[in-house]
Structures are given as structure tokens and as C-alpha cells.
Image 1 (spheres, helix red, strand yellow):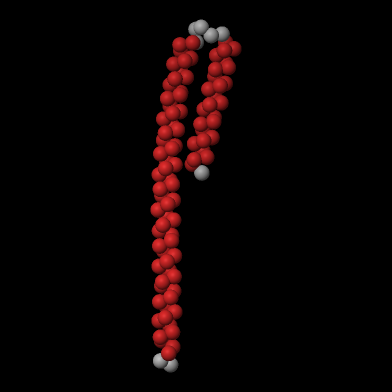
Image 2: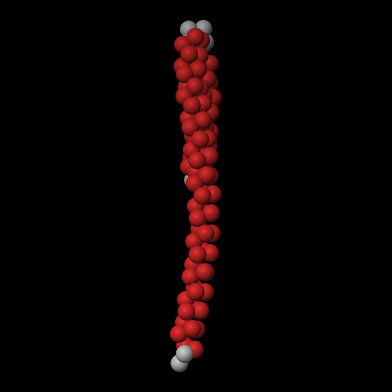
Length: 97
């Protein structure tokens, strides 16, 4: 009977050590994931700034060339810009995943 409490304590101690090890592993994983989230948020912010800048440049381009270009040239420019915006949106959505 004296052996039984010692075995219980040893088992409990082993379980506690395993739980502490798992806890440390999870803490490291959490820190890595938080760092990754930070990096992705930074990338998203940069892409959004780039998109805003491109939108402004596009509007300026339309204003500057609107009178000189024919209707088909304006449509082609809009299509090219639309494709660029969609590509940037895809990149942002991929980063958000």
C-alpha cells in the first residue's frame, strides 16, 4: 500500500511534465503565428497603399489623356487597369487566407 501513493505521485509528475512541455510547444507556435500574422498585415497594408496610389494615377491618366484618346483607347486602358486591380485583389485575398 505504501507503494501505491508513490506511483500515483510519479504518474502525476510525469503527466504534469508532459503538459508543461506541450504548453511550451503551443506557446512557441502561437508566437510564430502571431509574427506571421503581423508580416501578412504589413504586406496587406503595403498592397492597399499601392492600390490606392495606382487608382489615383489611373484617374490622373484618364483626366490627362481623356481628351486626346479615342473611345477604344480609353476602353483598353480601363480594361488593363481593371485587370491590374483584380490581380492585386487576388494577392490581398491570398494573403488574408
